[in-house]
Length: 182
Image (tube, rainbow, N blue to C red; front, side):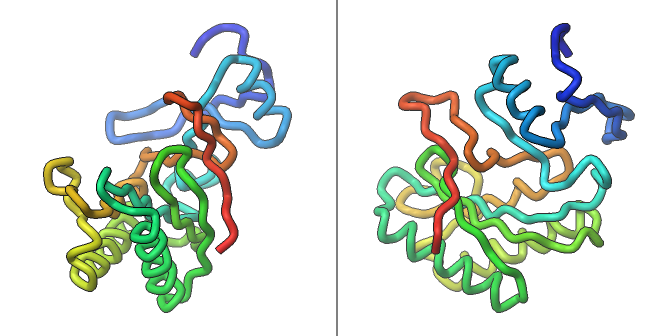
């Protein structure tokens, strides 16, 4: 990590599949301000906290529409995702990605390790595809997404990240990930 980072940007060494890795994290608004002062534009946190990096405390279902998908179809897909997760006992929140997609985010108890949470979200994605095959796909290949919404459950893997709420995006027009009311 580069010199000059303020003390409010914390560092911690965590283990990963290759051994150990140093990660950055912040705990409060001073840390966020320090990131901004260090010219950080996009903030992409893991789905866990530094207190227990091995057990996520939220899931993110990333709904990424193909270019032909209408806003009405994306809204329908988001509502279907919310309904399914809520029927499974999870309270869901919604935010934009700062791009063309939407994130359905659900807090979870920090009990399961990453592989089990990823498997759960894979099954959720597959259920949505089976229920509405003309609307959803779980195939990552861009060629298989034409006219469909990619249900990206891979945000729920160890060390994977999802854009933070209120984070600007390093893209044309600099969209911002924004929480929405249902």
